[in-house]
Length: 399
Image 1 (cartoon, rainbow, N blue to C red):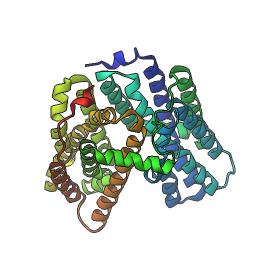
Image 2 (image 1 turned 90 degrees about the vertical axis):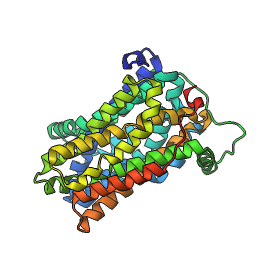
Image 3 (image 1 turned 30 degrees about the vertical axis):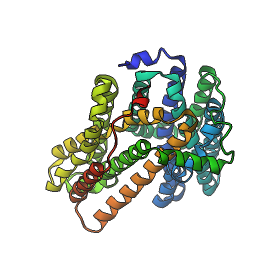
């Protein structure tokens, strides 16, 4: 079992991870800055939401196609170009006096470069880190992402309040430039991975990637398990504030409801990628997926806040099965399809989570109590996870 410290013995990982940390920090500050910038100019919550949606909507609509570039072009080049493009576009958003509609268009354009970047980074990781080091490296990346969400928004609010949204956006642009420089300096040049015998059109190659996944029973059932479990286990996030209100609390309690699953997820990611042996880890992946939803079922009894927080933490602990399973998924995919496979996986995850958020909100709006909605989400999710049968981890995934 590789330790997190041992990962930094790999030169390429050090540089790629350094760029990742910078980008995560910059993105959290920028998310707050965008909300402040748009709301200050328009006093419109709707337009603020439209601008905020730029961070995920491009991935939903264009992820499978745009991620194909991670298989068509040298992946190091994809990473650098995406970082520099995002830096330029985010810097333009910060230009004083820019028409609001132009700023929103630029935001969406900037986030169009995220799917190929994420796909290229995920596809390169197995080439940088051998064996169990890759599982640990993927775990560390996910833990870093969760920590940035736990603390980044708080820090982002402080920074935006101190320097203003314009300088905060420029700081985000600077983190992308720094990431590009680190990648340029630390990553080896590799040729584009696409086989010469493949079709050459972008859409055709995207379609080939989807067909590749669907043709492999393990890959498609793996995706189904991740999508189903994530949709139901993360649905409570959409109704955190009304749930806190029904429990007699307010924004502070809503923050606790949002933080509890992340805390459980962090603990689970550490256990699954650092503490448990590979054999034990592989055996508990499916039980952990069941835990991610069944832990929500007791919410039907409408317990108090302390019990609710424990239930959400347990659900987050179970949901961490995604971390090692994601690494196993990528390693099973043939190298020339890894970018497209990650594009399909990420886009599907955004879609099912978005639909689950909408369903949870609509159910509360229709008159169900938040506790009932969360408990029913747990029941339905458990049933869906149990019928999503996945074979044991394949031997070639461990090669």
